[in-house]
Image (cartoon, rainbow, N blue to C red):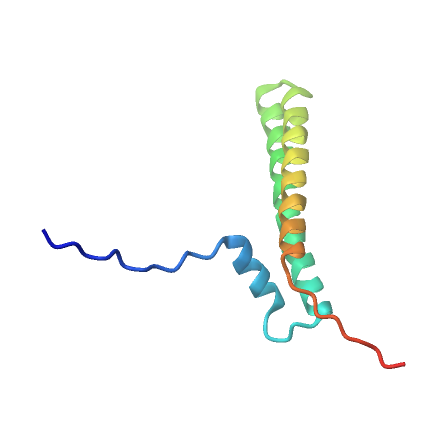
Length: 104
């Protein structure tokens, strides 16, 4: 029986690594990285917070269960917000920082 070697494959990059590299972009300036991460986080937070709360409010109106589903939507929104902030913190911490020495 002939034994063959398994092909060497490169590991696929994680999504977090891709986001960190795309946040740095071509310029790599700290302000561009900050603006990119802030804009990305803002639309994620808007979706994660508004959809469950508005959805819960509309379901409450339709089912006539006034505060119940809205409160559940609020709790889901807070959990989602914590997850978005946690992921963005991990992405921001994985970006390499360039230190410049100041001449005296």
